[in-house]
Length: 247
Ligand code: MG
Image (spheres, rainbow, N blue to C red):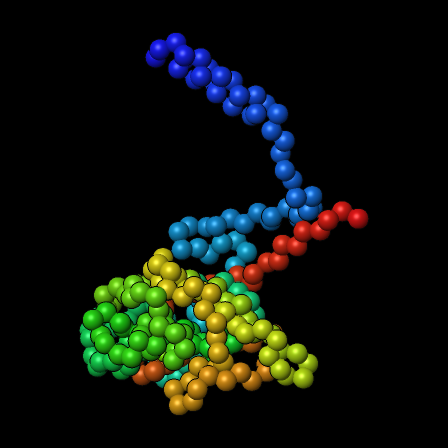
């Protein structure tokens, strides 16, 4: 380095050091509650603050579960849908599922089930591995509302994971919609629904329409005639974190 350049370099270095020394940290002034400790558990959870809806032993948390086949930690859809005995609103829901290994049927008839948030907003479960159907009805679609952003399906018979973040719709006391519902879905870890707005109850025959309902409702898993398997289902209420300025 020649001399004049060296002097410029030295001057710049000193200015940077000086500005770092006098930098003042900005703080928002908001007083936040300390985030609670949650043990995330093994990969795939459940975290310590989750409610286990199916741990592999029985479907006692569900109405209709007696019709399903439970063995070796796996519940297989049979004879009708199942509905949680408890009700839930805003939540994080983890569901592992597998469509039948032996491929039968096509389109909507192949590995069809569904996770019905509040019993009426369906995140589609379908064998969408090389199985064309209408896009807003394939796996991880919000049924007839929005296709997934990408198709992250695994092969028939392989275990797949949905991690669903749900913000329930809100209604005023007169039953008018105050705020629509929103759904985010990771399918096998891949973002496929990004805070997608629900337009109302998802239905085969009718366009989506909202009908006022309580802030908490049971979750339903569909039986659509196919022996879709499930395991490791858990749910977390979404905690609030509200900060306040000191008075
Ligand atoms: Mg379905």
